[in-house]
Length: 160
Image (cartoon, rainbow, N blue to C red):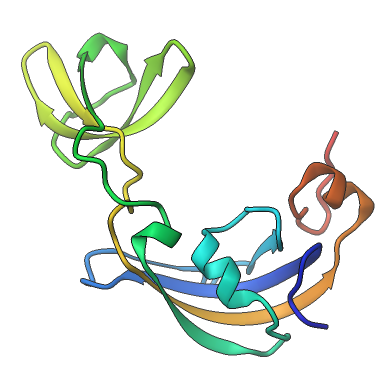
């Protein structure tokens, strides 16, 4: 069965940025799964998955525009430290949660002051070309519930 719309794809991955500054892998863990055609993974990787079959191993290089977007230099805000959720030690580069009018939001600290922090609201991988090493483990039909919810369900999980 090929990867196509409304199929659940089970895969192992290693992802790194093209400069080698970031790396993450599913090695030694359960494989990832997603519902193809429902925007559950970065668009560039989803496009590379299309048409592949179980057992396929490949490398996909995904530019920022098809991954987490181009970094916006204007996506910085200064907020009072008191608006951070359990901030702990504050230092540039650290991910924190900030309370906003729209609810909690993740951000990366760009600069720390005495009473305020400058936060970078870009996704941590924005502006980076990502290189994925993929092994497709399985491709199956999505259940009616998965199609209704718009995402894949791991085996043995229940949704309400």
